[in-house]
Image 1: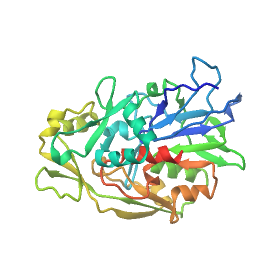
Image 2 (image 1 turned 45 degrees about the horizontal axis):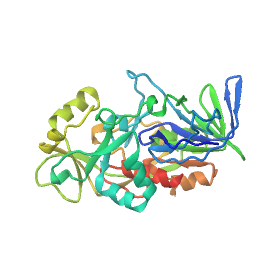
Image 3 (image 1 turned 180 degrees about the vertical axis):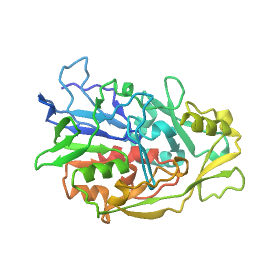
Length: 351
């Protein structure tokens, strides 16, 4: 089989309800069943990169599928509970926030892995840009679209319109495969990579009877707030917030581009505390919770997600070695502020 030298790129932090499925598998849509027979090595990095066969040289189908819930541009699907605020559609929360990057941590991660470094610097989709020339914020960057210099957003076209519209409801673990189910579709797969929001993952596992109401979910999270740009505490992480960007987020829910000039001089900063707290709830508390925090005061970066005191991937591994989770909850240590670089790096290594 011939492989393209160009990676097929998919972004997970950026993707809620996204799965990478490895076959051979049989795919059932109502009464229709199709079978694909092929094999392919894949690489998942959160920005998930998948090497797929070059379509110009082979007609074989790749043995990885990307599934995600698709909504029109006018519709949204946001779930909220306690510390969780999750957009359940292509692009996930990053399509709202704009994919900030901690440049200092990213530099360290690139030095640890040459392949990761090459991907970050040589991909054809985005580049990492500085948010401000102000020395106080030299550590803050973001994903910038190479085509138009706007904030990089995820869309179906990022995957050459090959994402399958699929709203997962539950999974069923078998000895040699896993069934992934929505209300009208079923996929049968040898492996599954959950690249989903943490609350979304909990709901899927609950619907699958893998979690019970009384099971304990714990995680680490830090406080978020806003200060004037004076006498900043060096221990915390700060992102400059020009008034123009604050208004854009309040009116349109997101910004389309960042202006270096506007970020060089700003009065307000968003701060992320470097002292996380450990939170603990029952599954029932999270599934049926009617209380939540405003999105502007959430980190959206919970880490060290555990089920009954077990890290989420270890907990699931005891159920099946065919399941992998790539989410902020799979990161062991809380990181104040920008976390995209660690999500990408962990998913790169884990696959």
